[in-house]
Image (cartoon, chains in turn cyan, purple):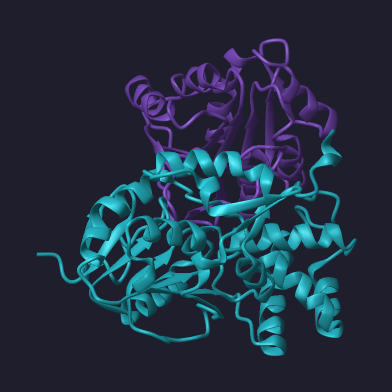
Length: 292
Length: 187
């Protein structure tokens, strides 16, 4: 019964009361090694998240300690790709939090529609479900032809999936329901063709989408945009990195540009608290520009 | 010395958690983190009931929130709740664990890594096996574990699978759990 789920916590490793602090030390050393060997800096990711993913990898690869994992990572370049996949966050869905998309239609779209050209940065786009959600919404509002979407992620594998726009048919029931609750104007199935167990979204939706490799931790501003869309990414970062990335978003936004975060994310208690105003408190939509 | 308490419950858990929290004393000084499998349409009303019926401030945990004594933090529906470090909590939208998000195992496991022997874990009623591995981790890191006696549990499966997998320090009927927590907290 228990063995069905391969993401269960691992207890049969060496870690316990006698060496709990060693676990923390080894993780610090591992992150340092990964940064120096591969240039990916995970040192300011949420520690709980890192520990869970690292424990999971130890179990999957039958490794006893984090030090064993470090050795394998340094000596086997291909194994590093697996580890990168472990640490990237790839749980996403179309029209996730429908009320957010509804409010986006009601409060943000009317402002964006006054612009001749619209640029949006969707940061941490993962496998692209949010990209197609946003493109559908913009299409229905008549804005898609004059919008450019920069969809970025540091994980090249997920970017490839995002470009394809092919998803499992079995997920469509939930997505259709989300879409309807979000104020969708037709049927989600109008935007894809189904074949066997998969669906493929219309290529026209992604015509103005630029999929690109961008690492929020180490890369900088690459465009000036009217809206930054970054949902459920910051929760995987610690406070220091959250502040750094929020500043990157702020620097990338035009004046009065919109910032959309995940439902449980917030700019409260961050350095940006006073340089953004709240458009919708519950759905975490903000606008660049001091609070009046 | 106990620095934090984690509680996990599923089916039948609303009543069980209330029974425990309502019987803890007014000056209770240890923060409490809870994963209860509950729908998003019911949690607001439930937390407001607990605020009225207990001495605690009861709330949903917020992202990177620094926790304080005298407050009870619940995992928000559809998010895993994790102990981030000695001072703060974090949320995650990672894959479901044991078909659950929030998952009791995720909270218990991350709490055991941070608090180690200064943690008290309590597993209550439920009709699945979430929490069993988390309790094992608490035990392994030297913490104290209490599981509800399956005889008093509305749903026995969760306490039973925990007892099968690890050796909880105490197996107690629901009515005795608040008393035991209070006793352990003073030590």
